[in-house]
Length: 437
Ligand SMILES: Cc1cc2nc3c(=O)[nH]c(=O)nc-3n(C[C@H](O)[C@H](O)[C@H](O)COP(=O)(O)O)c2cc1C
Image (cartoon, rainbow, N blue to C red):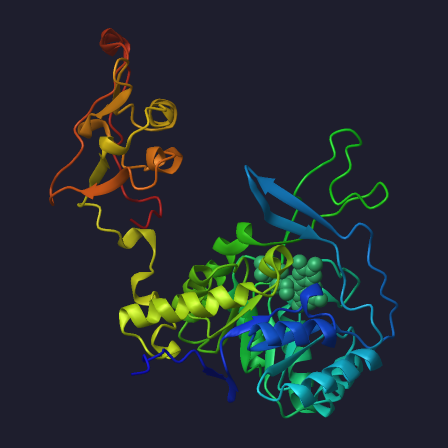
């Protein structure tokens, strides 16, 4: 008997996607030849490299990227200074027609960026006339810094609403606004897009940053003939920021709009996390720049197996499932505490736990020099978990919840004789200084 398989298809703004995995707008979605190979590998759709009107000549800086290695982890964060497409619009539209003709079951999202009202309108109409299933408005490229472009527009409520409404009036296909993370609150910029008529929001574009500085020449990387710039960073290092902004928007009841999530997705677990915080489609660039289009196969298989193991058969049942459990830190139950627990059968005696516990934790470990094993003093354990992060043996150190009411019981006084010199008096709060708590 054939095994029941979870359904990974999803409806997004009235269009069916065979799976939620899309190439995001970038070098990985630059031509029909590339996207065709991606579709053959299994991607459900593409947001094509951002189209421009050819009015401004686009020259990419050289070199285009820098990569930050963390330990043995290459491309933990990538920094790019790339602009929107440098290909003529006509060539790009012919590529998009080709993809439409040969891959009718895949979704084609045209990413566009104008610099003036008429230009946005022109690009939107061109895209609709050449078979776009949907538009993505690039309000967010941090590398396009001329007036009215990229994340300059994306930081202005007026520009976002204005350009979105111009595009909405020009076309009848759904319109998604791509937001910059280089702000404090994305629910507000997303609301401006919604007020302009946006049908969906995508996020995040790259996070403005500096991944390194050449310590001989003092030039920030990538070193473009003696000059550097804060520019777009992406990849695993930005995933926490992407998850934060998607969940903020998903939780906002007034916003209530479909979301396409990206930022550091490389594995099926990353993908699942974005679904759990409320994204319905998922986009990827840096993961592909590192491992190639083939990663979609692991994402499809991993997500399918996970869903089957949980008895979840529809993607919709996962979307936003984390949100009821995501709140502010003030809602934590602080009456519950725990400590770490060591399985010393697995211990290799490296002592890294001792170092971090002494220098950054609660000094909660005694060390036996003969056996080279730690012994935990529970009353001193902060449950900071640092020892588990540095331990080279997976699963050796775990969190253990203590019964309700258990509290650490510890005082750290270096020299009790100093008490006689103490001038301490307890603070008395008279409550009349505008304090809210
Ligand atoms: C080299 C490079 C070029 C990019 N070009 C574009 C672009 O033209 N338009 C756009 O909307 N986003 C562009 N992006 C941003 C990506 O689409 C994506 O939002 C970002 O990289 C975060 O996803 P990731 O961590 O999977 O790479 C680019 C990213 C990179 C690394």
